[in-house]
Length: 116
Image (cartoon, rainbow, N blue to C red; front, side, top):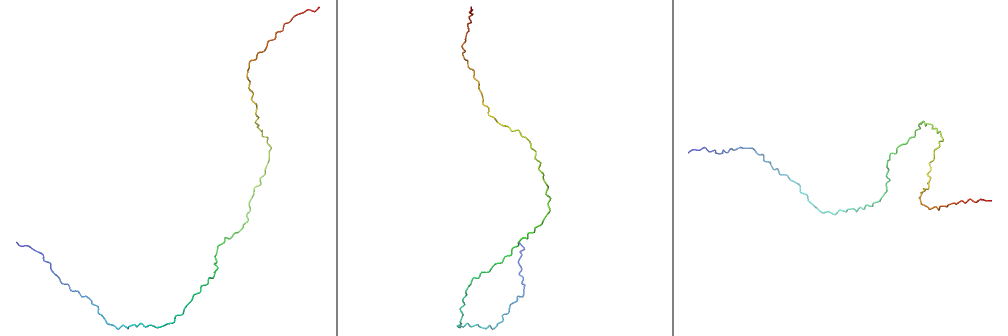
């Protein structure tokens, strides 16, 4: 039995790579030596000084103008009107009761007497 099989092909690609060139330089060497140095001492003296602050404030300017105003003249006319005064008067209330009273009966008997 025959079969077809794919075989991977290897391809060689050549590319140029830039390789940096190293140059040698002479670098001077720094030596560290100790030396005595006089350092002056500085003293700071603070003094408080008051500085006046100037503020600018805008003040509105007031102007006075005179205007002529017409004032109407008012005339008062008085009239005397009589107003009736209503008074409240308390009236005593009278109640009447009826009672039976026995009145004695007086009987007059007249005698006629002849006078000679």
